[in-house]
Image 1 (cartoon, one colour):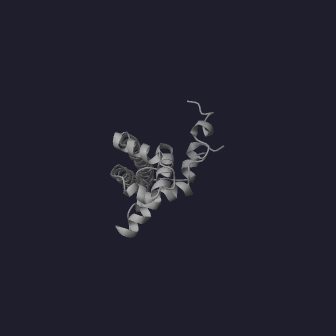
Image 2: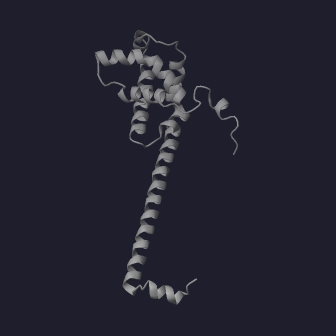
Image 3: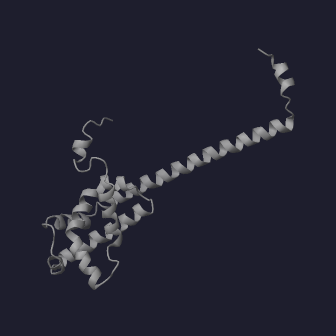
Length: 177
């Protein structure tokens, strides 16, 4: 094995080159940690959005709207909703919530699977009951009515959380803290 002195003679490095290499390594390290912090900040924003979403659905108005809507047998005739001021209000509350959630998923504020864990079953069931009403509203009032809610439903159906059909109590029964 060669001695350190022999290696230095074989690969001479001046002070400027050593400083340039050290600077480059410092910049690369800084970029790496900067990217890592940006990724952590994005994750924190998504987690906070999920928490806020969960908190926002603790309102009695939305809970009651889901409860009443899900008590109806699907498919629900649009006239049934239209002829009941309470059901019209419930439909609007659920549609507005679905619109907000769909847009949040699209913009990346919350992940689709997180939303599916939180509200997927309620959203799917509500959409199935409301879709004939939504189609009628689109024909008679507003062509883009509930567009993000439908987009969200379609994505939930296309990319469900693995095991969603069985339920968390079955799919994750072996989970341990």
